[in-house]
Image (tube, rainbow, N blue to C red; front, side, top):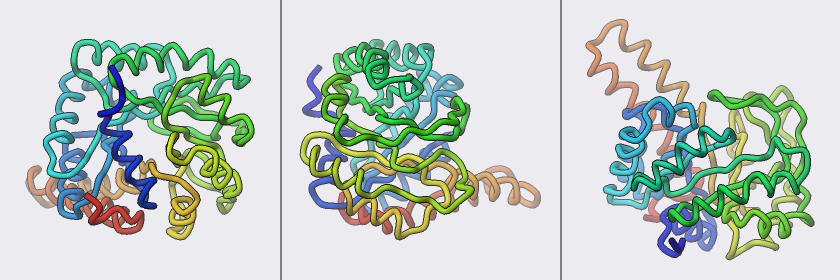
Length: 288
């Protein structure tokens, strides 16, 4: 199936052309999904509902179908993305669901644990080809980020992306979205982040109009670093704990004194406010 009508690519290509970033917010339950959609509609912003493989494994097809319905029935452009699909069982679940008619708009085929770029390509390519046949756009990672989160394998030996290798890598995998390693990491930064913006600028010059760029490892980043990355070519920005932790903390707090539906409402509103802040910061508010 051609990707000319792919929802994630359409969202990201417009963002790249107009110079803003798109929030890809990790969602762990229906409240997060509903909160993200509500916030996007109020802000008139595009967005991406993102989940980790552990969440997909828990809810399987009915959960994914719920997310797709919420996204595709929204009054603003929203897509659904699977982040960090590394293991065969995760990829097989996502692709088998697609072949049954319940398809993500995009997935990340993460073979960044491979020892070489060639091994990364060899691992990723078959899944990319299968995904594209189902109309799913694929994101890949060149280099390797340290850290781990939400059931993902822990990585301890980072490798920065080498821009001169990027064209061969993207052609080899056949993927449409690139997640570079620029000094970012998954989880908390022990030292202040030191992002190699020259890598982003080189990738932007190379891929503008053909391959969109995604930023991982965004916990605790200052606002100005987000905006600098967008200025240097980042279109998709993955967010996890910024929304997850205030939502979970507010739910626990409200449950001490309120009925469950009221506590859920309080927590979801907190989640929505985080999303709205990022729509404004990333420049996507009013772009839908």
